[in-house]
Amino acid sequence: MKALVIYYSRTGNTKIAGEAIARELGCDVEEIFDTVNRSGPIGWFMAGRQASGKMLTKLQPLKKDLAGYDIVIIGTPVWAYTMSTPVRTLLAENKDKIKKVAFFLTMGGRGDATTFQGMEEVCGKKPVATLALLTKNVKNGTYVEAIKKFAGSLKA
Ligand SMILES: Cc1cc2nc3c(=O)[nH]c(=O)nc-3n(C[C@H](O)[C@H](O)[C@H](O)COP(=O)(O)O)c2cc1C
Image (tube, rainbow, N blue to C red; front, side, top):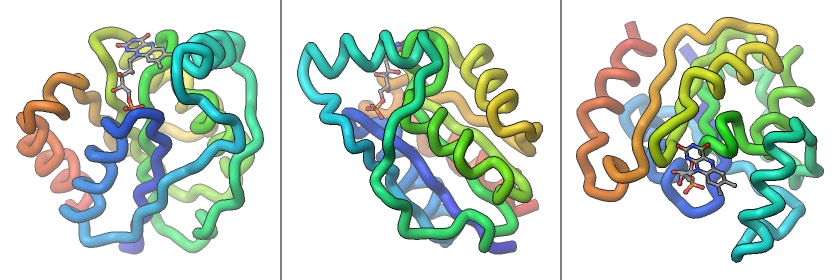
């Protein structure tokens, strides 16, 4: 099964998770880049507003074609109890290319269920698996077992 891990990460946590999932699966991986600068306090504030307003952004062009994969594994940080604006945009623009989908996220503490539900709605597909990680577990390295289990369920 040809798999792609694709993720957005503002401050690196979702990147750590995404790269680890791709390593575990031995599959392609791509980081999504926004054209909007989201650094600093203003970036943080705008991110929250745009996420809760379900707004879209302009992404930098993707390198991979999602239609070329049997499964696409999509990762986002939780922003204001929902997916990040770049991931909402990715899903909205590519949903027709996605055959099978799985989701993962990182979060400070709350909003995984609403985020997964929102991703499913925008994508129009039920994920075959989901993984929610706490930022603190990503930072202290105790996320590895969860990633192995998630990747294992995708290989099965
Ligand atoms: C604008 C904004 C809103 C956030 N809202 C939430 C939230 O509703 N719930 C939560 O648990 N964490 C929230 N967080 C924390 C991030 O989800 C968390 O730090 C995540 O690991 C960041 O991932 P990244 O490093 O890949 O960008 C928010 C962060 C930002 C920037």
